[in-house]
Image 1: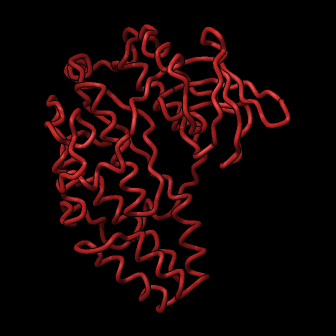
Image 2: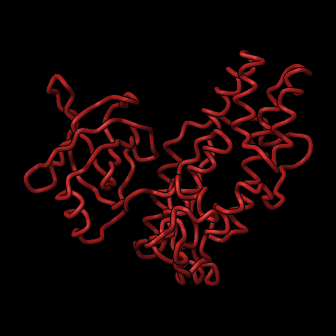
Length: 315
C-alpha cells in the first residue's frame, strides 16, 4: 500500500528490497551461495540488486536458476492510495517499473484509491464503507479484491518465521533519490520540468532516472468488446480495459503467448478500427499489447462518459 508521498515510496522500496534479499538468503543452501549473495545486501550505495544478481549467474548457474524462479513468482503487488487526481496514477506505474529494473521483480498495480472524505467518515462512524452506496471508491475496492482473489498464492513459512526483521530504513541509494525528489506531494501538481509533466526537460539530471519509467502516453480506462485476429484469420473475443496511443490491455478467454503478433479489432468503436499489436506482458486484468493505436480509438475513449471500473473475469 503506497501513497504518492516520498516517505511512503521510500518505505515500500526498502521493504521490497529487504524482502527480495531475505527470500534469496532463505533459499540459499550452501555457504558459498550465501557468500555470492552478500554483495547484494550491501548494494545500497552504488549498484542495482538486479546487476549483482546478473553477475551471480556467471559464477553459479544452479543458484542463478533458483533465483530466476524465486523472482518470477515473488508475488508482490502495489495498491496506490490517497490519490488527489488521476494524473498521480502514473507515479505508481513509474515506481513499479523502476522497482522491476532495480530489484528484478514484477510489481503490478492492482488498483488505486482516491483520497476521500467518505472513507475517512466511514472510520469515524464505524460502518464499513462497502455497505453504503456504490460509487468510485467502492468500485476501486471491489476491483482490488477481485484481483487478489484471482491470484494463486501458496502460503510460505517466510511469512511467519524468520530471523530478524525487514530493513525499512529510508532509501539512501543515490541512484534512487532523484526518482523520489521528482514525486509531487499529495494534492500538488507535478512541478514544472518534472518527469511526466508538461514541458518536462529530459536532460534535467534530477529527473533523468524517472523519465524511462514514466508512461509515454496517457492511458484511458474503457470497458469495450473486441477481437484478436491471428495470421490465419482466426478470431478470439476479448474485453478491452485500457487504451493509449502505444497499446491496450485486453482480457481473452485463454492466455496469450508473450511476443505473439496479432491484430486487435475494436468492435465497440464505430467503423471497427484495427491495429497490429504484440503481446508484451501479463497484467492483473489480462495482457498488455503494444502497437500504434488509431487516433479514432483514443478519441472515442476520451469522449466516453465515466463508468464503473471493469470487473475481473476469473477464468
